[in-house]
Length: 407
Image 1 (cartoon, rainbow, N blue to C red):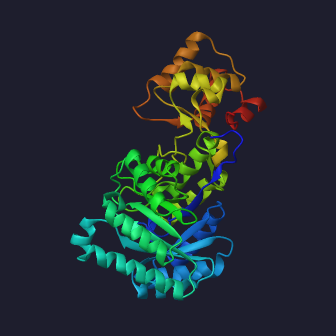
Image 2: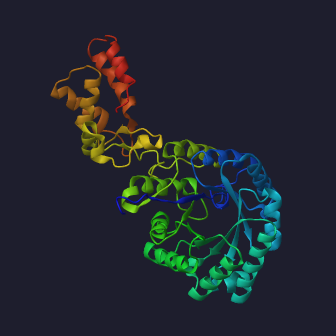
Image 3: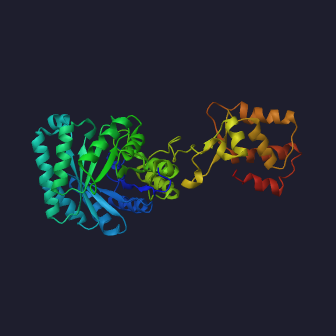
C-alpha cells in the first residue's frame, strides 16, 4: 500500500440471517431475526440479508419486520430469477434501502443436473428478472452467480455482462461448494472485475469446506472485489460461510499492509455472537478464532511465563479489542512459574520443598485435559496456605488477590 493513500473501504454484507440460518439447527423466528439484525447493525456492517421472502411465511414476516425497524442499515433479500420471487421480496420489504439479490445458475453441472435448462435460458431469465426489478422501482439489484467457482468462462461472462446491461448494480461470485483455493478464487474475481467494471460492485461469497473461506475472501479483495459476504461466527450451510469476525480482524490488524479497512466495531462482535449462540443453541467452541472459549487463554508453562512478563510474547490478537479478556489456566502443562505467581499474589511465602509439593498436588497430578481458571486455583491455594499456617484467616490483601485477574 502507498503510505500516503487512504485505505480502501470494504463493504461488509452480513448473511447470518439467511445463509447462516440455512444450516440444520439454525432456525430463527421473525422476532429473533429482528433482534439479531439490530445487534448486527450495531456492529457497523453495511448490508444485512433479512431472508428469502418467497420461501416461507416466516421469512416474509422477518423481512417485513426488518424493513420496518432497521432504518439505519441497508437490508437485502434473496430470490430466485423469477418475477414472482422478486415481486414477493418487494411486497415484504418495499424498495427503499433494499437490495434485491437474485441467484443465477453459474455452472454446467447446475444447468444440467439441477435446473435442466440451457445456457441461453439461464442468461435470458437473469435479464428478464433484473429488468422486472427495475420496473418495480428497485435501484439496488445484485445478481449472485451460484457455483461460479465451477462455472465455465463463457457462461460466467455472458451472465455478468447481460446482468449489468439489464441494470444490475452488483455481481456476487459464489464459491458454493467451497472448492476453490485462494489463487483460484482471486483469478475468478479478477475476470469478473474486468467484465463488470466500476461502478458495478463485485462481491465475494465463500464457503468453508476446505477451511479456506477467509483466505479466499481476502484473495478476492486483493483481486479487486468491493464487498465481502460474511456470517457472524461463520455459521451456514455445511462447513459454514466466511466469518465476519475473521475478516474484520484481519483488515483491522493489516490495514496498512493490505490497504483496506471496514467500518466494523470489533469490540461489539462477541456480545452479538453470544446472543446468536443462545438463540440457535450453538455450543461454545474452544478454539475458534476471536470467539473461542480458550483463544485468549493458555495452560502451557513456557507460554505462561512469557505472558506473565509481557502478554505480547504469545499474543498478537489482543482480547480487549474484541471485548474479551485474557486468562491463564492451570493444567498438566503449567509450570512452577505460574504457581509462584499465585503464591506471591497471596502475600505468602513457601520454601522450595513446599513449592514442589504444591506443584505436585495442583499441577503435575491433574487428570489429562483437566484445566481450571487461575482464580479457582488461587482461591484453593489461599485456603490451603492459610490452613498450613495454623488455620489463621486469610488477610485482606490475600482476599483481594483471590478476586484479582491478571492484566
